[in-house]
Each structure stands twice: as structure tokens, then as C-alpha cells.
Image (cartoon, rainbow over all chains, first blue to last red; front, top):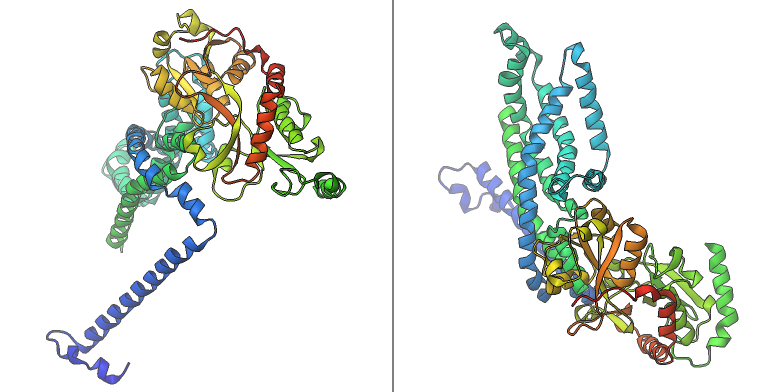
Length: 284
Length: 272
């Protein structure tokens, strides 16, 4: 870059210092470089992948337009079940998670059993894979001989999800509760608030707000794990895609299902990111 | 492992001469002079006994050896591998010459893989438990419609349920037969649809109070469920396999194998 470039006609633009003009140009330049390199990589991928010897087979098995259009409506319909399971699980998870977090925060020595329960609970349910919990609870408890409709896989599958995710949410909430400075409790006590009121009116409102982004991440993970309920019977999107797969001997329905999941989880992830940045800004 | 490799190589060298006689399968198999056959993991009764296909016991194990012999392979030249359904249909090179684990031949599947001529026509049967029968379930479509259904998700039982039984409540679907059985024990489903031999095994062995309520005959008009050997699309071995199967069908060997391993199928009422 020559001196003439830096002193170019832009330098005389009203209201801008020469430095600002220079920085704007640098920014523009890096944007062009970024765009070009991205385009080059994309182009290389688009040109090179089809050259692979197995591409025709992969295309037929994974990116089959006919199969896609035939199965996509059925997948969307099955996805509604995922959304429903998510919708009724999420509030239950939050409530149970909160309860467990409060157990772990029990401070009186007499309440130590509660605290122990909280510790054991989070250890066990965070340590066992979700799918195992779903199998054990989904088939095991109805196997005890519960009458219909109380043996439904929807009920016990939901219980399994709630038990597992509540453990994670409890830990997140606990970290939120512990992040509130001790002086807040002292101040509340000096105002004459009891332990329960302190928790309810002083600690929790701040703690819960502080861990919203972390909880958002957990709920995004939950949205995907809902698909695991298919192992005990419910025909949600993952199972429906599996049925299409075996009928058509084609994996395209899985690609369709992945797209549907992305359509929900990507916006949710961006929103969680946004909340996190906002919070970081507010704190700094 | 190394030992088996060495012995296989030694074996191949010793039998190489015997195979050289311009046989149909020569040079068309994955490994020269060895026929690699895939089955499920695990492989189930009565298709393969005790999950040990090498013992030639069980319907599919016996069929595999009969086909291999007819194509000119000695018993010792048959090597078994295991595969899941998904591995069998995924694109790319296969690790087997043919795969048999009750794969139903369908038009859609034919587009991705090749099937041999059918080696078995499967009747679909209804498995249920005694308490359900006591509550009045019987082998009629009207009665079956009202049941709560389950099925193995990657079998042709799923479309058949939708087309023929048309149950009132949406069926629940599972990843394998063991889960279907578990759901029946937990009383989450009343009945399940599966091929007849599997149904007999499920009702007789896996369930304490299992009943095979009835069967849909294999030759029901529109879409008979027939099992074929699955091969990679365009596998040149297909013509040899088909020729062998045609011979086996014609001279009654296949029927004899079926009678030996799947004989008990008679006496199950037919659902009209």
C-alpha cells in the first residue's frame, strides 16, 4: 500500500479523521479477504467431493431428492411429537432441578440427609447415560404391573428424561446460587428475612437470571435427546426416519431429520449466545 | 487372528486348484476361493442356532451352506461375518459376498442393493399374550384393529400394519425384537407383528404366556413378503447365486431345509 492510497480521496470525507478512514478501509479489505477465502473453500469442496469415487453411491443413499420429498412431510409430523415431549418435560425438569439445587444448599446440620440426597442424586443421574435411564425406567417400572394408561412409555420416558436433565439443571442452578455473594444473605438477615424468604426473594431471583444462558444450553441438548424416547416405542422423528430408512433402504430421511433439528436448535443456540454476550456486557 | 489368517491363506492355496475349473463364481467373490457370508449380530433362532452359523444349524445357516456348495465352495471355504441392517444398505464397498438375515425383497430396496431370488416366503404372524386373548382378542381383522400394536421398526411389518390391520391407535415401534418383547411384558402393547418363525420363537421361548394368534398367509394377493440374499448393487455374483437358488428350489433341497428347521409352522390359524 502506498502513501497515495492512505491519503486517497476518502481522506477528505467530512467528519472522518484520516485514522477512521484508514481503519474502515482495513475492515473492508479483511471482509473481502474473508469472503474470498470462504468462497474458495466452498468451491473446492463442491468441486472435489463429487470427484470421490463413491460419490454417486453416497448421493443416491444420502441426498436423494425423490426420497427427501416423499419423506419430509412425514418427518415434520413426527417432529411435532418431539416438540410436545420437550414442552411438557422442560417445566418439570426446571422444577425438579430447582428442588435438588435447594437440597444441596441446605445449611442446617439437621438437614444434612437432604444435602446428601442432593449429592447422590446429581452424582448418579449425571453419571449414567440418558439412554440407559430411559431403558431401565421405560421398560422396568411398567414391568412391575402398572395398569394402563399408567404404564405408557410416554409417561415413563418423560420421567427418565426429567430425572436425568434435572441433575444437570440442579448443578447449574447451584452454581448460580453459590455465585451470589454472601453479603446478600447477611443483608437479607439484617432486614429480618428468614432463611426461606432470603432464598425466595433475594438469592433465587438473582441466581436464576445469572444462569439463564447455561440453562439454555441444557435445553438445546434436551431438544435433541428427546429423540432417545424412540427406543422404548414412541414414533418420533428419529424412529420415523428409521422406518423410512429401512423401507426405502436409503439414509436420506436421516438427513431430512437432521435439517429439521438444525432448524430449531440453530436459532436457539444463537439466542443463547446473544443472552451470554448481553450478560457479559452488563457485568463488565 | 494371525493364525486364522495364515490358515486361511494356506487353505486358499491348497484348494485353489480345485476351484480353477471355470466355475461361475470364480473370481467374483470378495476374496478368491472364499465365500464371505454375513448374518446378524446376534443371529436369532430359528434362522441360526445358538448364534453360531458355522455349525450349519438353523434355516439360514443351512441355506447359506447349500447355496455355497451348489456354487462350488466347500464348507470350509465359507467365512462368516456379522453386519447390521444399516451396514448392509450403506453405500460403498461391502465386507460380504451376500448377507442373509431375513431381508424382505422390496422394490425400493432393490434400487440401492441387489437381491437374489427369494429363498423363503414369510407369513406374517400376530404374537400376543394369554391375558390379551382372555380379554377377547381373536384372529379376525375386526378384533385386531382394536389392539395396541408394536413392531420392529426396520421390518416390513410396519407398512403391513398400516395397510392391512389399520389399527385404531398408532403402533409403537422398537429397535429390535428383544425390545418388542420387553414392551409386551410391560403390557405397553397388546400384540406384535413379525414373520412366522420369529413369532413362534417369541411366543414359545421369550414369553412365558405368549400366543401366536394367527398368521397372514405369505401369498396374500398384493405384496408377498419374501426373503432374499442381499448383495452389493451390481454384484456379478448375483447370477451364480440365483442359478444355485433356482436349482435348490427345483430339486426340493430348499423345501427340505425349510421342513427341517421351520416345520412347526403348521396349525397356526389363518387370519381372513
